[in-house]
Amino acid sequence: MANANQKYVVVGAGPVGSLAALYAAKRGYQVEIYELRSDLRDPSTTPLNFTKSINLALSERGINAMRHADHEKLIQHIFSATIPMRGRMIHGRNPDGELYEAAQDYDIHGRTIYAVDRAGLNKRLLDILDDMPNVKFFFNHKLTGADFKRRKAWFESRDQTTTSNRPTEIEIDFDLMIGADGAHSAVRYHLMKYTRMNYSQEYIDTLWCEFQIEPNDSPTDRGVKSKFRISPNHLHIWPGKEFMFIAIPSDDGSFTCTLFMPGSEFAALEADPSKLPAFFDSHFPGVTALITPQELISSFETNPHLPLISIKCRPYHYSSSVVILGDAAHAMVPFYGQGMNAGLEDVRILFSTLDKYAAAENNDPVNSGINDAAFQRAIALNEYSTLRVADAHAINDLALQNYVEMRASVLSRVYRVRKFLEEF
Ligand code: FAD
Image (cartoon, rainbow, N blue to C red; front, side, top):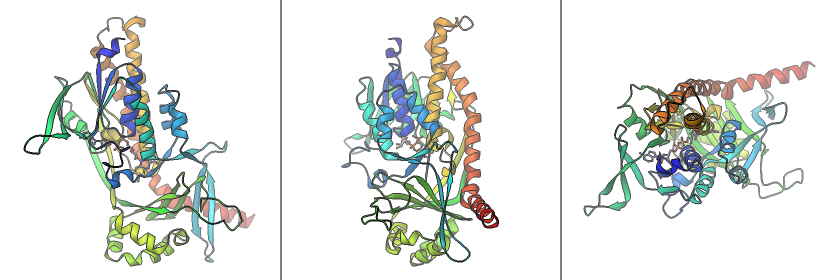
């Protein structure tokens, strides 16, 4: 197979890089994956803060990209650890002080999105890649330099050290480098030196911190024993105008929860975390019945308070030698639940564009002069970049807008429905 003579190097073994490696391997390329960190499946080397993972909403956009990977076990493997979420569950307190829950389905036909553990999904993709003979992994390798004209790149190998205990630098060559190395992408940084890239980034004034609702270990009040303490088939939201608390179900009956709040509010509570339970009672009613005040304080003190960045750039490629995907190309705020989904979709669209021009060699009379793989790839990457920039920027904007929808507008919808029912 002609593709076997070409080397595709993927930088970053996150969900997007792993899926890109699978697409490339299925097409017969020699695939090398370079990842800064150790193998996240190896508990002896992976730092706790990396194995500890956020739960994500996986939607049709991402599922479709995995379906098109054309691997018979992938979808089944991924779906073995997902939970369908058919809508939002809005939590609040009535003016008379009573707690309420209001379900808002996503789809009148009952179609759902799925809760998935990001590290779990990532591990499953890596397991599948392990079985492919044309894929090689290089964990603990950090991209430090790239020459996209000569198609060479340099990595610091943390597995090997020099006599002075410094990491060894290795030089590699490649036909195509796929940069899937996240929001602070080194591939993007080097790409900027080869193309007139427009770039903008914005940190929004919101930080996030993770909490956990533990599984139920006693029968519920209806006498039905369920491991879930609230509905497992909803994405739970406690909206709070300036703040928001959400909970996404996990396979083991727990919920991974995220607090989103302006930096100044975090600072005030950091100064005196003992105020946290009262803060939750006032803004997120009912949560302290699910997470004890001690657990709330301990998670707030232990878990990092992390920023949210939104990145736009264009183009996503240079010539035939490099393209960036996923967060490296378009990190977005998480409120539309589409960051990873859009990154997985990048992979599908990139390879369908590459396939189109690879096929043109023999079949397309208009492009019959194109028979050099690098030339075809350059045309494909240019088309990919043109197509994808507009869509990715739109998803980025929608994600920013949806923060207002999730933390405030959902409430007005609940009030409107309740008022209607009262008057009815
Ligand atoms: P990453 O997951 O960041 O992976 C990049 C990889 O590159 C990492 O493994 C890193 O170690 C490696 N790397 C970095 N630098 C180098 C280097 N120099 N050399 C070699 N390797 C390197 N998305 C959704 O679709 N749905 C959701 O519900 C959702 N919820 C979210 C909630 C929160 C709180 C956050 C923060 C994000 C959420 N997202 C969601 C977004 C999602 O997490 C990201 O879009 C997704 O992880 C991006 O995947 P990626 O593979 O592009 O990048």
